[in-house]
Image (cartoon, rainbow, N blue to C red; front, top):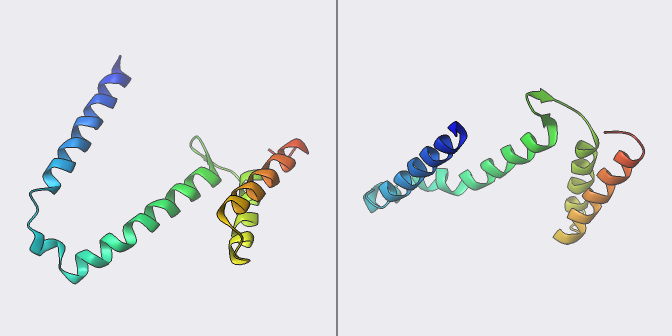
Length: 103
């Protein structure tokens, strides 16, 4: 039951922050510093999620097939492959390495 209380509390806090965002004066959002931060924030959040999901299992850092899949995905992106091809190559790489016993 405690987990549900935490989920509901976090949801209420997130909703409160969203509502509070509507009260921010537009002048504050038009400042160059705020514009730079809001432009870079999605990329930084996505990068942190990718790193966290690739190199961690629970509280431990690991180097497994997911890392190899990420390396293949980066290579495919550098070669300007379509996004679906990048995802498929990364997934196949990780799957084959796991099948070969590298978990």
